Length: 135
Image 1 (tube, rainbow, N blue to C red):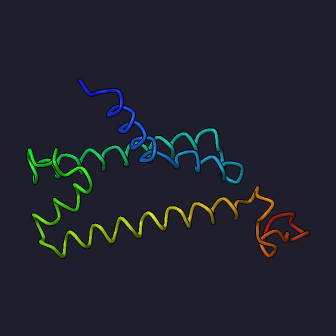
Image 2 (image 1 turned 120 degrees about the vertical axis):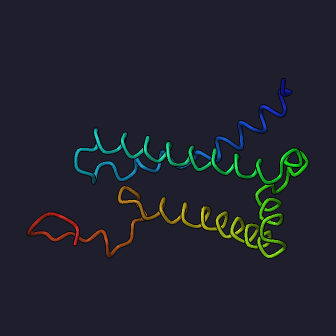
């Protein structure tokens, strides 16, 4: 049985892994039939991400075996090193760094450029007055 600290640590990682689902709610006012479309999109995204995470776990565990327990810092990079050598390890680490930066940068950009945000760009705020809709 895992300790409380291990459970808490894993919970934080899982919350971070599935974070972002609520982003689908931001444009829901601009979507046709949001009552149908948004739940479908959320459950589809959750399903795809869950399958991807399970597949990554199974493949990494298959490659590293019992060594997976000792590779707590970067297990995917360790698996890539076994399969592709040092270049594969560096590729996975670089991909993780770029993904983390992209998550932070894009998250801010999306929040600031949301159609409901007071910081929405001036050009996109202009409406075609004849049709009462954005250009």
